[in-house]
Amino acid sequence: MKPAILVARAIFPDVLTRLSTHFEVESNQEDIIFSPTQLAEKLRDKAGALTTSSARINRELLQQLPNLKMVANMAVGYDNFDLPAMAEFGVQASNTPDVLNETTADFGWALMMATARRITESEHWLRDGQWHKWRYDYFLGADLHGSTLGIIGMGRIGQAIARRSTGFNMKVIYHNRSRLSSEQEALANHAQYVSKEEVLRQADHLMLILPYSTASHHTIGAAELAQMKPTATLTNLARGGIVDDQALIAALRTNQIAAAGLDVFENEPRFNPDFLSLKNVVLTPHIASASEATRRAMANCAADNLIAGLSGQRPPNLLTLL
Ligand code: DGY
Image 1: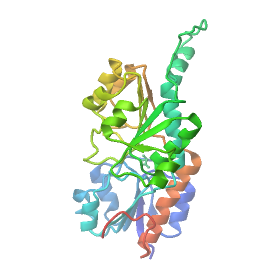
Image 2: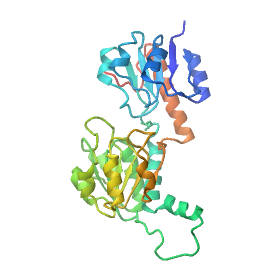
Image 3: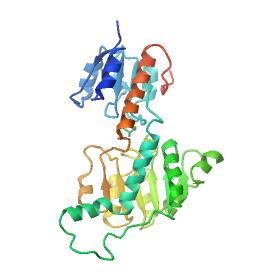
């Protein structure tokens, strides 16, 4: 008999077909966001699950699921997993690293450029019928070429973002839990390792791409925003909670920094509505990895992990320390 799994959110139909050659699949193509009680109910008889960041796999849930053996997240981030609890309950966990690095880095640049050059703000103005003449000072923005790019979180995506800056003749400074090797720094446009305070002080454009955890909660708050240049932009591709959104709103409102580009928010998708009244922010709905090819690669990577894990092999992207 094939093991039973839950695919907890809507997914590419061909990936469901692929999974159903290995498993009895319960799918959710209606894309209902299950409450913790519904998720526990759906998972009660399942050996595995394919999840996204909306499913919290924590101790309270695991206590109810003695049959569960593996959860494969379709995301590189796994802050929705309580890994120590998963290890304690003997549940393997996996994520989807690497397949999204380049697509996410491309998007980081798109968001940073849109933010620095006021692309969405000026488009809204044009669509609103306000364009009657050309003026020398309409929508003056900040240059990227020749400026200093500051990156907090220099994992694989951060390095891919830094590599792209060579064509813009930018200086790259970064802060990370640990310093890269000199070879990695050279490949990342000769990125220089500095303190977090130096990144904040020197960056013309600040890019956040670090994992979320209790340790990185509010890495950027009022005190950090106060250290940034008033001409600086901030781009958050990482996770809601890395930035204190209330403090950012205050900083944008008072022009303490010039602008922000945000793909992630605290409490998303119910983000702080005060962002909507600000012109100097570009807002996107958590789509940094959303190219057709990459989302397919992520779905297939999660499926590969689940297939390996539930057939007794080591999942390629195993996270749990069992
Ligand atoms: C990721 O892969 O972590 C993206 O943010 C999608 O959740």
